[in-house]
Length: 116
Length: 113
Image 1 (cartoon, chains in turn blue, yellow):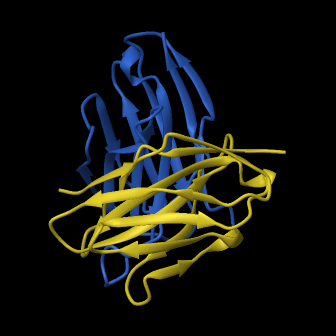
Image 2: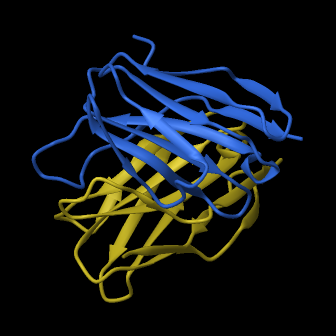
């Protein structure tokens, strides 16, 4: 049981380049999330998905796109990378219980992205 | 909307000493409260959560937290820390029936021998 995995672990981009971060979970969770972590700011939600084929914007969605074509995968895309997107990106997933709001989120190990 | 404030960005503490990490939140609706821990170069993992019932919640690794509704606080404590507790700790809230966590800025704990 691998839990939540992220690919790649590290990446360096030049301004204007594009890339896709892959998140995979093997826990059959309905909900998946993408966060970015910046010093002193905690984790901020970029986009999330409540099920296969559905996505929604979080707190800081600009400059990012996502897709959830399969239940186990959640992709985060940067179409034209900017230095402000230098960050550590975390994916998470959770099993949604009927008593909403109580779910524990399970996090991947993170992707460290540098945009030059 | 809800917000979370962690009052200390860094807390140095000696091994076997107690530690308290402070968390205050604001929300116009009922919330559930969480503490996550991030060890160096790893993802976050759940320490404990408050959903309802007793206001004192016990978590993994000897940590506990107390929910205080009147003060809108959820402070985390450990009576005796170990070197292995060196990590960053995040307080988070989720509104009832919601599905999105709001995190505080984090508190970095450095345990010194």
